[in-house]
Length: 67
Image (cartoon, rainbow, N blue to C red; front, top):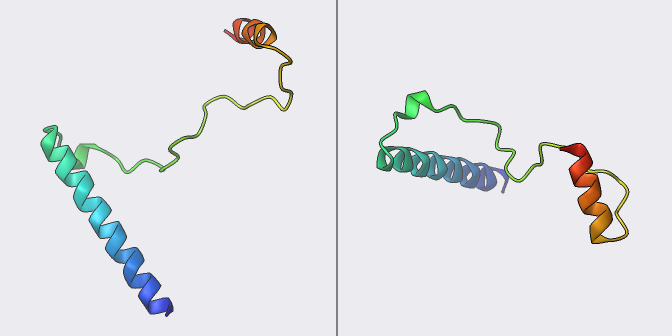
């Protein structure tokens, strides 16, 4: 069963790489000039505060202060 999971993972990765190469060709980019990156999609650049603002105005004030 572990072998099946490994095969699936390998197949998925190969399909993903092929899709990326096709997309790079579509947008006329050289696949060698693009690095793989770290696959951290959806992460935020700034850490979140543990405190939640009580209202919208407070949230806007905090956003203005950090800018």
